[in-house]
Length: 165
Image 1: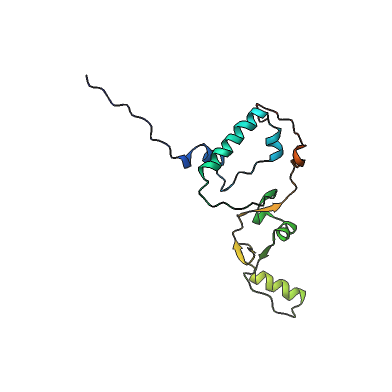
Image 2: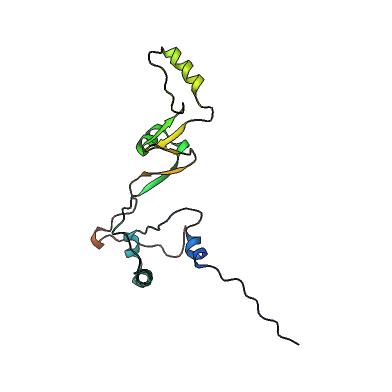
């Protein structure tokens, strides 16, 4: 009887591993972690976290890194579902007439007729900073962070370990 070589599953490439899965279907390029929450975790957890962060830093010492980042809490919105105030806050302009403007001097009735005749049946075009946006795009609006500031290490939030309920 001859031995049959063991077959093993193909090795998974690291870029398709647990970190990739953690991000889910998002296109996020960063994972932002609240300092307040991390420093409120048990010391053993903090030690493991710091060890992982130091290992990551050590593995990529040779790459140029940004000096710092700016992180802002936000809420995510779909452009064509936003109200006028939200569009204004995001600096997004909606154009129902694809760049055309009505002639000056029209009466209210004539303006309504012009708008009806020139309105794009597919809805408005959206732009921010002169760049056209798809109406189904997701954009962020600044929001208040619900997690307290770490306050120089004084803020403690009791962890509820063991569940996501």
